[in-house]
Amino acid sequence: MNIVQEESRRDRKKIQRRTLLIEIARRSIATKGLRSLKVRDVAEAAACSIGSVYNEFGDFDGLILTVNRETVQALTARLKAVPADDALRQLHGLADAYLGFATEHANLLRSLFEHRMEDDRPFPEDILAMVMDAFALMHAPLVRLLPDRDPNDVALLSREMFSAVHGIISLGLEERMVAVPPEQLRERLAQFVDTHLAGLGVTPGSQV
Amino acid sequence: MNIVQEESRRDRKKIQRRTLLIEIARRSIATKGLRSLKVRDVAEAAACSIGSVYNEFGDFDGLILTVNRETVQALTARLKAVPADDALRQLHGLADAYLGFATEHANLLRSLFEHRMEDDRPFPEDILAMVMDAFALMHAPLVRLLPDRDPNDVALLSREMFSAVHGIISLGLEERMVAVPPEQLRERLAQFVDTHLAGLGVTPGSQV
DNA sequence: CTTGAAAATGAACATTGTTCAAGAAGAATC
DNA sequence: GATTCTTCTTGAACAATGTTCATTTTCAAG
Image (cartoon, rainbow over the protein chains, first blue to last red):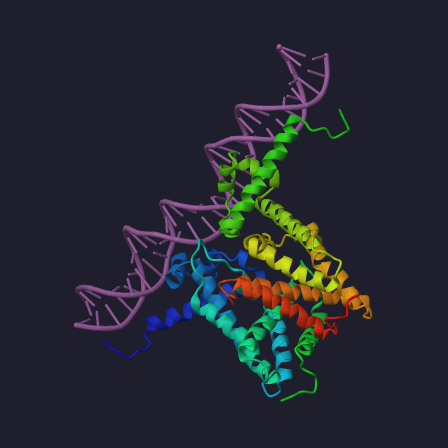
């Protein structure tokens, strides 16, 4: 037996189908919402049997969680792509990137935050950690803008600020709820960040 | 036939059972989460048939929506009970009341915000209106604190602020996510409100 | 080619939302 | 109080959907 992982035909097909299944599930969630996702639909769309979905993901939640994992990864990638040269601009960029992602992938983001596990099974650690990481991305620019504050304080502030942004966006996009026009939302969000920073003592000119 | 609505025995029993069903469903959601709610469990707990649940609420979503309706009513009542004599204290009181409600009824609030309708059936208008009303409760005190601002602006600000508070609370209580200790959350929330007000130009002494 | 391990299959099962024909209960009329 | 009519109640049957597993198929190793 070969220790080196070489890619047998079997493995190739397995990986290929796995990605296909994920892609189909993601598309379905994105367009019709998590609630409309059905094992049989996914299996049929992938031209394979129901059992294969179970072989690959254990259970249905496993498939959903895999999609969610990739969602938070995509979100993080997008947030990390925001230029970090100017701290103030970066904060605005982060908020705006989040809004952009939420607008384009509303159902995927909902799936990430709203999906509940069956019974009381615990939420997967790794997804949790990834979300925390994404939420921590506001930390660095805030530290630069608030050099005199206790770093622990800033850590809390950044999570708080991200949570607030999250709330404004997720409710703002919920057409069924407050229903702020997306274009206006963008503007409001920027203003919110500015206002809050002003409250923290950051003046528009105090760039590091 | 009598035009006046008099309460026949039939009506009494009907109302009695309706409230019983709602109460059972609410308890179940509150303790085990929306996902664990089953028609059969509810029917059995109320000692009636499955069909009766359907007679009363049309379908399962109908029962859930009824519980959600009462949840937002309870929330609104609690928010309206916050003293309005001091605008600043009122804002803090509103945030704190929301946090209290969210802490005590986390699953009920989740059910309100996370429940998706089957297919693409629209979200009930009346619940939507009630949520908007609740969110507008920050408007009055903000107007008092910002007498010079355009009222339209303040209306947007109040919804924005409430959404932000909602985000901080809902993510903060999500033990699976950011997991801020509830006691600390209370403190942070107050600080958040103060910071944001400061950013809006409200100084601690400028009471109307 | 043979063989043993791994994967794929899909029929059968389990759970749960939904319907509806038949029966029970109550109100209205006499 | 009996009769009739309306309404509500019931729960078996159905439909949709997640899950399992014995059987078959695939395929890499010898």
